[in-house]
Image 1 (cartoon, rainbow, N blue to C red):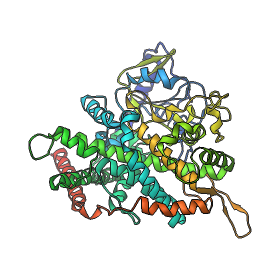
Image 2 (cartoon, helix red, strand yellow):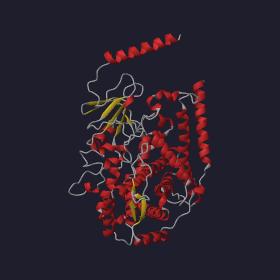
Image 3 (spheres, helix red, strand yellow):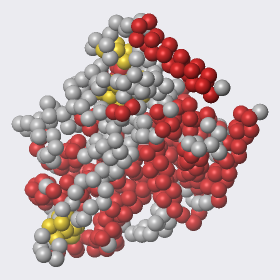
Image 4 (cartoon, rainbow, N blue to C red):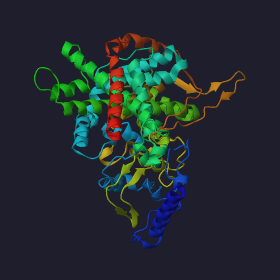
Length: 548
């Protein structure tokens, strides 16, 4: 019996191979250049290994055209664009035909498609984008948050002054405090670990790992999604279920907190409270269910997207200053000359700080926080420049390559803000925020936030190598972390006030920007257990339906 089954399988494979080789209609256009595939398994052996620095799926080939590679016949086709001329115009046209943000298995299992960034292009996607654009879509709109950003930046400086050994934790606290205040009107724990920040950080880490394409067996073998939970190889389903509980808890716990405060009349104006007021009907201040879900998910995306990328960018800024003291000195010279040494820089100073503006651009180009865009899946075949992108292909833009292409940026690995100033005038690295319909909705907010944090930090602190007991500098090495969002791994550093005048300025900040009491005790932490049990029950019910 076993030999009969083996024989039947062999016959099917032979027929499939013969059809592929001799009877299938030859396409008119070739695939884009890429590594040669093997029969059946395609380019599975060429998938990027763990720890690839730029998280790229280009199979390590730096070519001036899209790279493509067929994956196993059951998984589809992969295409990675690395052409610098594409992003500004061609990518926008191509994305009109890439209707789906992704179709990867683990994110689908974890139901991350409810997040705007990963949605198909539907009416729901347009509703989410409308909410986000009306609050964050222009520089003028986000300028109303400048007060919060300045206060949290000053508190960041105070934390460093009091406890310089925990700089990386202070970076995370500032990013979380700023975005949570603006999105939910929530005050984080001023010094210790905040429970809401902790649970949302877990969600961000899960999402970043889940969205790296083809890093898990279920991405290569989508049929694994049909395995019962108890079978070997189905562990990813249990992981996804736990992630989903975390995702829902991180979304609804702060939303419910805003609703309760609005009922009590103690709420702080925020993204969520404004949308609830705008879309509520009746006296109960409760929007319709679909609208409520849109508010919940867009608010969650603002935090998970905004805080995570900000942390990565500020860590990269610190590392760049260690390796490029001449750039740090030039930026500080401009700040001292334009702003003076008796106060901190503000948003009003920005037009008069051209080197700082160039510095910000270079910071985001030099360390690409999102090395690749999220994968898109096209619903139809695309012919582009004489090449064929097959239907149901996974396509991404390689942001890292766009921003490090030596044909565009001279000596691209160097940290050199002067590249954006006359006479060089190299292109602004706008592609870091994405393209087309899915361009980052918080890009203006992010740039405002980074400007105030970086400029104020440079105004009062000096960042250098750590020196060992022999007086030699300890090397700060750039090491990457896996995930859709790239973070530098922690590294040794030294950060001290620049001089006595800066010390006096830092001491004044605590009076000008006093600490606020946290809202952590007001949150309904039992919700997490509720969401976890709900997802366990729903999975068990689906299992019973399948068995019946």
